[in-house]
Image (cartoon, rainbow, N blue to C red):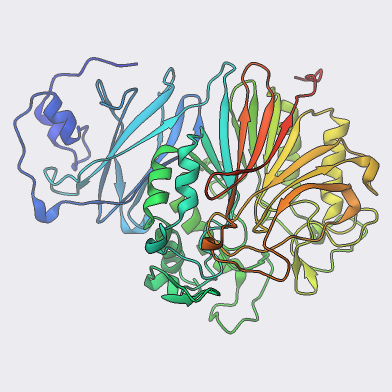
Length: 527
């Protein structure tokens, strides 16, 4: 989809004054006189570009500048940028850590969108950065093949970017399978995990981290939280991936601090600020700045949302962190604010969204697993409580959700998550469960992307999970470095014609460890 270039005018030069303008390549294309850049004032693009939260006609585009400037973005349906369209400029200032985010609209009819990001110095329209390009594939309204990948857990347990070992290699492995999009299942950073410059490995080798000031202590200030996210952009693998694969991001605990809940007051000598609600507000702001997330005007802090990928698939991104009750023994026998995990508003949103969906497959992206026991000392961090009987504690809310899916006759619901730092496939079925009022379903777990490896977890029998596959470190070994080979991601492939969904659990070298082929149930009457 191209449009003829418009005639060049003097007005096109007034970029930084708030008027419409073209990037340098657009000016050259139109035959304008050459411009001598003011090199001392020229910004640079810092940390690459990103896209995310894609819809059939729009996408969020992201860039970060080296100084206060105006973000200029061109979009085209071809990599040569013939007939490129200039989007409205966005001023980037220190108040957003020099990050610009733009909801690029008017993309209807484009399959692959090519975009080009520059920054122009405020007050000097001649001082324009070199461009950085990206691309993204938009969802289609008609049936087609779809591929996505998912994982989580980045720069955890002291394992940062070691360039002598290829950096964060799993990002490049995922890029090479050319997915339509990526689900980031949370723990996008470890704001509570400082890095040392060197760590001795069990084999006598040395792991050498890139270290920045923000990564040398636990994050407490807004700038320190921002520095946690900026660190990931130092990795070339991440930058290449983010420039080519749209990201659907959710958060979990380590974007703030380990195992946090909103009511918590820390008892931890590493922190001078003990109020977790305040730390979480800072962590949330940094997360929302550094992720290409679309924030609705009616709910500018809301992280849960949904994305349609045509008749075959819809993705429901959950937030299992913001609305939960305190971590506890998790054995309450009645639902209350203490047993909340999604919270009532999100619960109602998800139930209605599942009912409204016409997609064959409903992909629930959860930042924590259902049946895995995840302790928090003597308390519990996730849903399961190690009691194999009827639902108690946080299990009560999940039981109500699973029963609603059954009662509403919602077919083809599949859960995807990370969090536990190994990979596994779980099948849940009422005939194996203590609680029986639900449809059988699958849950797939894969991670970490670049962090220490642990597992396997103990399973709670309340919802009848069967572990059909897992790969974790050998018994007695934990927090293995990325170089040990236990880094994982998952790949899901939808066949547009048959609507078969094939799940592959993979390692950081791209080897398939397990394959699960899911055939769709017939569409229900509400579809």
